[in-house]
Image (cartoon, rainbow, N blue to C red; front, side, top):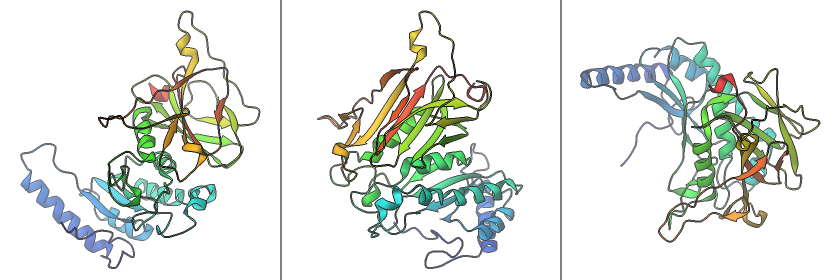
Length: 336
């Protein structure tokens, strides 16, 4: 099947369509959908343009489709071509990763300044384009965290199967490392996003959401450093009920939570430490809390079990590791 009309926004890829023409076509499509599905609810959504973000082009397109567009989508391949030999250095460079925040910020501002009700999606992302790079994962979790912090409602990964950026091995369909990262995100990170920052090294990436289908919050920490272990705790701006909070690696402000008799589980948190086997970033084997993650003989995903840690202990983030921390005893008004 050949798909026409992909990545035509802005300068386009090979060819482009002007924003006013794209808006006119989108309005025509929306009218067709309303007519064909007039007796059907819910109706199919109008999702466009499916291309790379360009401020001027997107603003004109959004302003001219205020009642015809349900979702505004853009593509992200911020690491450049898959043949780039410096992809690992880019992935581990916090200043490089921060560059993508400019796209999210400008799109968010464009939507806020418009009368549209359209929501932002990342319609396609795979780190590096042209099928990625073999044995090099991309900045997947960091982009998930960053996109959510700018009110992106959906993030579509390129791809489930295919190329070097697939979540499953193209030969045997065994999960690649990013599959387990995505699965933990899906299970632990709720829809409400909490404003988060980390005081200390820039090599720590920090994100937090209300916990999914559970009490408390879930924190995501990524350590991009190859040798430094960070010990950190959670501190809040203001009272316990404020939704903004901050992470400190030096002299953290500790929050005292009341202990409840006969409910010791409320003073413990649940941690999921993801690392590459033997510390090799090119490894195809993901470790969870020091144990290999692999499907069984029938192809079933292994249980993703956390370790329980007393709330008085700092969170330890080892070199080149990813840590999800579910903290059920933190009660925030934003998560109720």
